[in-house]
Length: 346
Ligand code: DAH
Image (cartoon, rainbow, N blue to C red):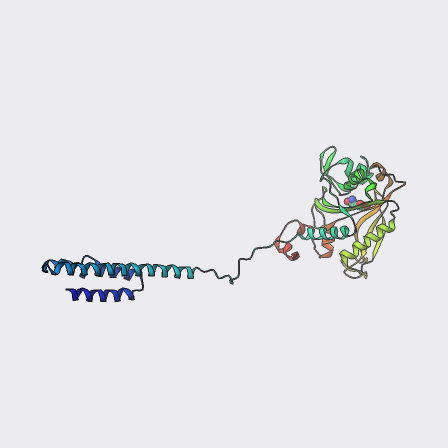
């Protein structure tokens, strides 16, 4: 019986050592230590032994059982650890795999144009001023030399909120607001003012009831039309190319005297005449002029001592000309197929 036990042990230990999965290991446990297994069989037969032999064989049998139990236990831990290791290996993150790309937005074309113009003027020592979009009739019209019954108001059909407040039709009211507050002890007035304006227009390819403007204003002693022309020339060349020529045409605005309209030589044909410039060789860009003495006085500035120039332009027009956009509505409908064409990396 002792031989039988020894043989059993060797056989079992060998088999346990060779096991590669927890399942097979469990099968072995049942096979050797289970109720119907050889150990149970041997135990049953102990009764047939002599009283002398019984304790010896019993001791060996117990030992074998313990050895097998602990061999199985060890193997079980070994296989468990291997399984975890395998699982970890399978779940390793490959950091060299391409990541999920984050969709990056870009500034809207209109914002890009406005920022380009802002940067140019900031570089020339201007600061940026802002004013309310819901504006008093006084600032939008009266302080700009457009009294209540002035016919030039008709050109700017307006959204009135009350009798005396409206959605501003132009950024020019910021001129009056800035002048009222200004103290020349702090230096001259040099501002630009970008912002939204509103008019009761029918929307079409070149008109919108809401659009943007950039206003400019410089007031100091001895400011002349030459300063205006020099400034606008820098602007034209920066926005449309160094080769651009500039011409000033007489015009009318109630808040400037004299008033001028600035044209640039056509960037498409260089001045020969083409579709973009309607055969004239020139493209109208903005309105400007020398600030009317009435406007200076109404805002508390001595028009005998100080003079200034002002200009107002439409970033939509600049964007449309520069990038050949054929319909102003493309700038507002936010169709990605359009906006994506103007993505820039900072
Ligand atoms: N505010 C004018 C408009 O909306 C544009 C303009 C013209 C602004 C001449 C000015 C200027 O500052 O001097 O039509």
